[in-house]
Image 1 (cartoon, rainbow, N blue to C red):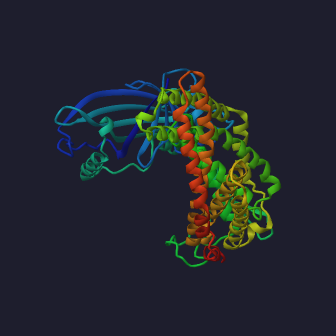
Image 2 (image 1 turned 90 degrees about the vertical axis):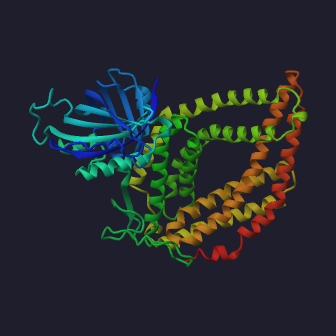
Length: 555
């Protein structure tokens, strides 16, 4: 079973002459307690092209010290990492390798570099004797894995062993860890000439100094359009000039065409790349059941599919359509879990709003049993999808698409021109669906029409969000207006789904002899809520469909 800890630490350069300052008295530190010396032996794993290192991820097998075992470290913000631990074994444990599957794809994880560390530890404690942080002075030896059995042995040409000294300060105070203590410690260290380390980690420094330089991230490679629809592969961000300098980065103005310049190919490929990055980064969070991770991954999947459908003047639909079909599959697999989350929250809130005198029977227990059963089913389905070959093939296809994008002639056109056309085309589709929904008779026909309008609103919003770097504030404002329509229609659809669940719950309660009165009451409330949304739609749509918002998009 893997355990997780949040690592908050800072590293500093040191040499044989470095002496630690007296840290007693900084912040809440009352005493500094010697904790002795530890000898650590770590073997770091990565793919041959170092995909984990490129993503700031480390996987190691370490012996010695108080936390011997396998350690997987995932970025968690500036200066912070999630460290997931598993017991010692001969090979990388599946509970850790599954968390980097979206990074390594079908590559093998192999030993890359070995580090031996002699660590002298001091613990910083407050006046009550509670630990606040640890200060470690590390003597480190590193060499390529498999090329030497011990420090000092000869390596192959161009690869040598490395040796250095560094200082780590890590917070250990449980839930009350205060980064301010790290700031105080840093000032005290700076006063004696100790400065932050240039390398972000021991592994990064070891790879650099032993000649095993980390690979550059594959997902930074962008294929940009030529004027004839061809592709020239190079590293580039949207709006970046040929000299390599980025745009001014000035705040968006409300003027037409105030976004950054560049080609439509630059714009769309950067957006596609960003959504793929989000999917890959959220993969381990979804596997670990981190709150809101399923929702965010599903949104990125939908945004990516929407971009393929909206920007057909840039990317060849004949190539992207099959990929979009696979993205639709992934969104559906994630949607089972996400829809359950949304529905459960809605029903729990609804039950809580019912006066106790009207809660007849074990309503809370019935809802809890129903939710847990559906949760187990949806959770298993999500994990099966992420562990399957189909998901892996989709990620590989997306990487290939970015490396050699199927660009059309429009990819070489100015981004504002193509972006505006795409957004307005999706808007016209949305307008048709809203009119159809408003004209539909009340009941199931209208429910279906409103749901179709909701999906069109989502696609229009995503197209506008993708266009924002090119169109500036007009795209932002337009997306915000369409989002209000989408949210209203989304609440209506949630009500439709909730009524289906309430019918199911009422039937189960009736069969168990509990009575279904409360669930029937909630069903009626959901009907009234849906009717309210239908009455609000004309007003919300009128605001979102004002001509001035569309006119502002045209360059």
